[in-house]
Image (cartoon, rainbow, N blue to C red; front, side):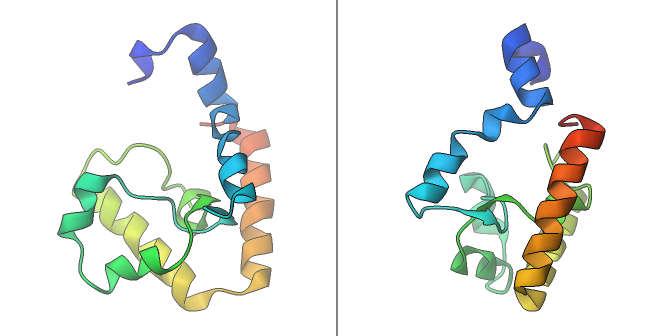
Amino acid sequence: DADRLPAFGQWLRATSLDEFPELLNILKGEMSFVGPRPLLVEYLKIYTDEEMRRHDVRPGITGWAQVNGLRGATPNPSIMKRRMEFDLWYLNNWTIYLDLYIIFKTFYALIRYKGD
């Protein structure tokens, strides 16, 4: 909840600087820059084998779902379902050019929307 964050934490979140420690996970090989965002553990039990394919790749700091407006909280199942559809589309259509496009869109979104 944003109302529980102190002012500095809200600023970190608004600027997406709270993602910076994940760069260490990339250096350790545990994450990639682009890929499906990791799911909360409680979501793992409700998905099909096809949807669980997203765990065949390293999670990313940014991804196809995020640059298409599906980032942040998932207050209802329909948003989570859409996010899953975007993640599966990414897995089925991956190219290096798609990753470069996602990186470009991520930086554009960070500048334009200020971490919204």
